[in-house]
Length: 198
Image 1 (cartoon, one colour):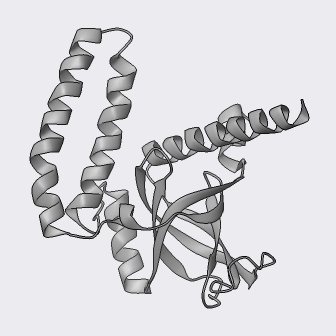
Image 2 (image 1 turned 60 degrees about the vertical axis):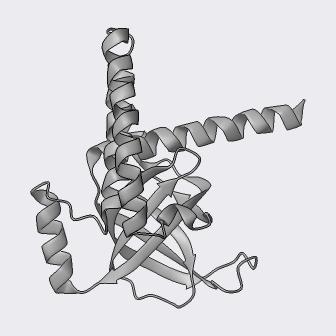
């Protein structure tokens, strides 16, 4: 198995902002067809803005070593656009997904597990919104529930069930960002373990 493939299946315990909702079969087909055409329908302009911001930041980071001046100009233009657009976006949508509290998850580039209030049936299609912490990277993707069981961790009595979800549609750019986030998280955990061991 290639290194990139191994990273797709690497799992880590994490905390991130998470929102999800069930899709009926008609909406699922519509959303996945849009996804395949690259016509992703974001829940609101704020979410689209967050995705564009992450994409721009990634691209600027890639050109920085070669063309520092161009990268700096693009960075400043991006900040200017952010200042102009942030006001109207927040006025239209007073609440933001960023206002939500992070919750415990177990995540890989192929799927995610988290706790919920009520048991969900395997085979259920859902829409997922993830915000990686602390980066603030927003990911919109779709998944199917492959398992649901009583949670062993009793810390969350208000969410007594643990669901396991396989991603059925996620942008490759977002998957790469998720892989990078997971690897950074694992490196941080390893460093903490080493410090405790010394």
